[in-house]
Image (tube, helix red, strand yellow):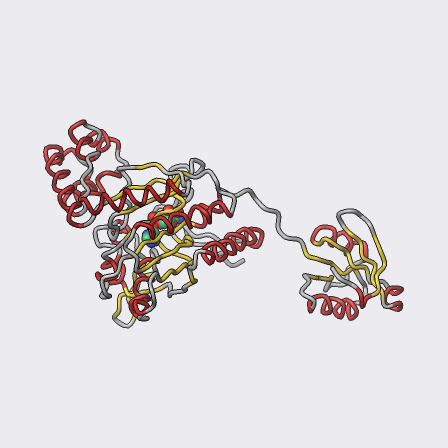
Length: 409
Ligand code: HAM
């Protein structure tokens, strides 16, 4: 026998029995984000590599270690590791800046990151997300966070934790980074290799290092004092305070987490995550924030923007399992031609119907019907000659005879 080919490590089939769940989540996304005025956008899965090095940031793990990149016709191409950069590219390229602000877009689809696979972390995973362009006021941040919370509620996830933080603007953040570096300088040789690199390239990321020895250093009082300090400039502080006042007014529960820095470079001011205690170490269901510098960094006009993305596998793993939908009817008949005709009549009415293409014994067909359908539609010789169908409700066992022309499922 030929050798079996298996699915690639870190990727998964979404099997028919699970697809109902995915469609349920996708339909809710369309409904809830639609209710907030977001329109769906579908961008390509492959983009020019530069988009991500310039967009996501070449000091991030995503760009440095995790991208699937290949050459084609002397161009470097990458499977998208996330979709904010792609949506920004499309916003600029399609002149969406000319539309009246805010421009509100939502998306769903596969993303690719070459990470070490574990529970809740795959190499091909799916995100659903939104991006809002053109509004600098914190009401936009609040509306984006509310749309995430509403969407999660709509699929039955009510008890997730919303965490927020402000990373300030490039100006006040630069001062904070310098302060952080100066208190950490004496400990530089004791930090892990990754942190030693981050120290120069991206000192904010030091804060979410998972290595215990690093965390011990970061919890020293003189370092905690800097981490916990309020480094925001007046404008950034006002923005953050106003955002919190909207969330309070709308009854959105959140906590503030000074260590929330996110793994992508484009954020300015607001960042947020939504977490679940039932997910183990990969506990973030949603991550997002404001990225006021990204549109201009990728060649567009200076445009404020804010958005988020959620991991669909993580969302779905939190939902109770649903039974697969049953067919509306299963035709039980040994007359294949008549079964074809009845199936067609019912399918044309929009009903889901199957029958036995192999023309097995009547009893076998009835057994199958009780497994896969809500009703058995019995079409024996008597029913055929009388223009009727015997309809058996497979839940209650009740059976009635109906004129074929009046049959409704
Ligand atoms: P992110 O935090 O990298 O942000 O990803 C968002 C969510 O995608 C995570 O919270 C997680 O649920 C899911 N996710 C990420 N990596 C994996 C993985 N390897 N396996 C399974 N799920 C994963 C972004 O991607 C930003 N583009 C979000 C954003 C939009 N910010 C502003 N607008």
